[in-house]
Image 1 (spheres, rainbow, N blue to C red):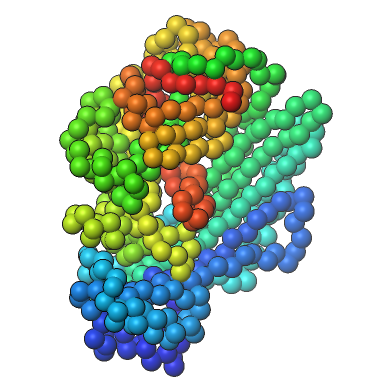
Image 2 (image 1 turned 135 degrees about the vertical axis):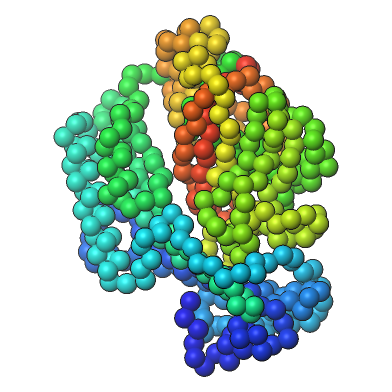
Length: 441
């Protein structure tokens, strides 16, 4: 962030000439939605920016947001007025060293300028070539859409600490519409430029929904989840449950050490970045270890409330929004069994291959599965297609009977409390559950 030369308040705060300890979190970025069949130049990305100011006198704090550096004077007065009312409890803990780091996109630290626009044009050209590649393989109307997100985050305080990072994500969705059916190729989120993203997609075996889905009776079945489905499943049934601002989290933590899963289950959240959106250094935080409750994911606010260490999980989707406990990358330690061994564990079971969406509320969850099959002795014998999986979070965890020996990383987005589209990840193996409800509606 460029500090205006005439902004005395900001300059004084950062030079530690005021009586208050000051922190600023600033985010700026650009988002581009691309449909190569409709793209026209010049490309005009959506620009977003904003900041959060925190003032503290050592006992209380005041907060205010601003969208432009020129608005900082007003934000300072608002935060100071809040501080003087002595009604807002202080957040504890802060980084105390100088550091600059890059995350996801450590090489490209460019300013958002005309050079960036030229890169976007090259990205769109790559998308158009990919579109033509699909046209050569399939008949029908092709739909290839992408979202390119770049964001720069800076944290600074009046002690002189400065932290900065660049993030890059690309999302590609490919579909084919025909008169007979709807073929879904892939929906993929990656922390990399579009050309590299498309190169990876082209090297993969394309998945598409061939044939009609058969009738399927709803009920409880043994099931195996692919690493992608398992990652979203654990994100919902463990991650959200263990975010310290949820209604159930404190109750869970009060039972720290209690068993809620088999002893071979170890689940943590391992950040992809060095610091969170409150300037706190991140760390790998175990939520479940040896099947037992271990710890919660904390922002500064929840850590101060519970009188525990900050874990570096305060995240905000955009500048000017309040950070809250959010996941980074949900991880599960692999087991010892091969994927084929798991698929043959039950004579007949359901294999959940891909997922569209998921939701959780308190101790309940719903997975919206895009494609599933019935396996008979490990061999697919029936295509279920789209279906739902639902149940109790803690009950589902207790029914895990095995996990595969290879974890895979997947990226996706998460929504919480009107902060939608936060990029998150999972790094988990396939999971085998002995009984869970699966149905068409």
